[in-house]
Length: 426
Image (cartoon, rainbow, N blue to C red):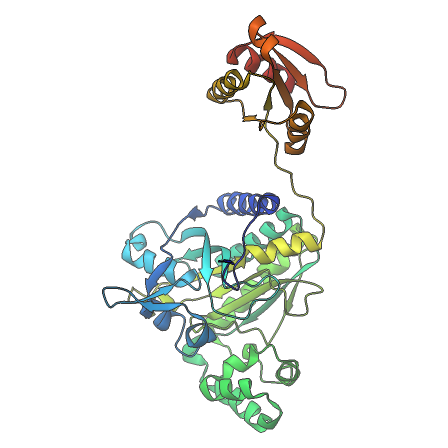
């Protein structure tokens, strides 16, 4: 039988692991700098969590969720996004009783049944942050700044922030009516998928990736022209905060994009995306926004929140595209090369060295030349050569593989060799 990985999934091979380590280390470092603490939620959740929270009419719920009935008859879904799960955990675990806002981050796999393409997988991984319990524009600016710091700390350049405000749900009727009327006047120019979206939710049409729809959407009514009261004050204050950010982060810039609505029901007020300048709307690195209604929808007390999600695979693709160098993994401190009948002694030595906290690999049983080549291919710092004569004399030959490195005879015990190697690595 010839097994292959399921379509839309990927094996993360050792050569790619340095990129994953780099992204995850930077994500954790930056989130911690902003006072965010890690949370992990289950891969599986009650299906109703996403139907209620994300929205029945969204593409995620309509077409993309992996949903099944478990042996107990419950409807279970593999988590398609992180925010609803974090909000469920916030409610269930009484996090509202602590200091607010609660700042959380996660790095987790997500599952969506969609057409695989570059940077998009059916099992993908997200770094996300959520700030729950504060509706101020300062928290919006904080989350946006965190996203910018994450991108720039990774070494990615030429990225722009796209920004919009959807206002509040209770003040959105006039906007939605005008938006619906606008698209119905040009309905014959819309592709079938977007005509269907128009029947379900006019706002979804603005999120279309079809070029003909995007061209029409450029002239559609703009949500920021309809917001007032607290929502307008919030929007104006956020714009001032972002202008101030420009004076600190010289490369930071943002554009107001009236077509940006995000595809989930729970968003209100601020929505944003970071994308490379040459992406053309197809390479979003970070996407998020404010979701003040969500916790109330899920049965908790009305609690404001804002956050973002960032695909790790997409970020790694951009790192490679921009040829950002990442630190290569360090090879073992020692490869033990065994000759003749010294294999048992070499194996025992390798065990002793590892017990002494020296990273050690025992070379496979091959010729000395092949074993030395094996050590070089692993990027080892040193080899310890052990043959019958060395065992009889109670010594080992330690060779430094760095250019110009020397070699020495050292007493055949793990502590002596470990001390010698540590001194050579300083």
